Image (cartoon, rainbow, N blue to C red; front, side, top):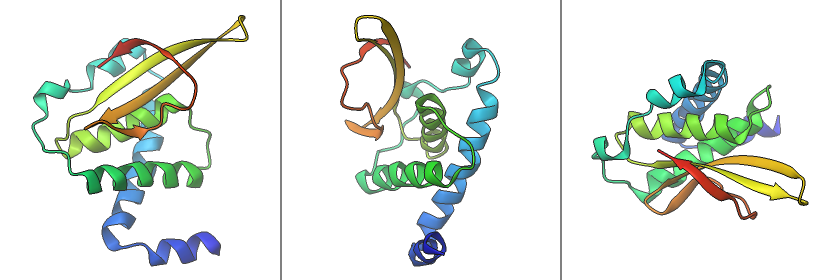
Length: 137
């Protein structure tokens, strides 16, 4: 009931963004079952996207992906959230850069992470840890 009350209070455009984010999270989850090189080819380079990033729209997309992730019945890793947010930005012709990074944790465990940046704003968070960037598109 608490979620329903919060959903009703959202403005109409944010409700649509939330619905879009849920659909794209699911699509990204299924999409990433394909080989990674195939998935990367489906992302348009930032140079092709000419839209001017509106800070308010970037914030709304960030919030929509975060809300949709809490709503999803499946577990989404950072890569799924990053792809979903990237697809949302691509639909609006807004440029962004997706980063993939690695970190050595406790001197033994290698941890991977993905994050998305548009107009110097983190759409999906990098987190507090210091990841070494290994790939960006």
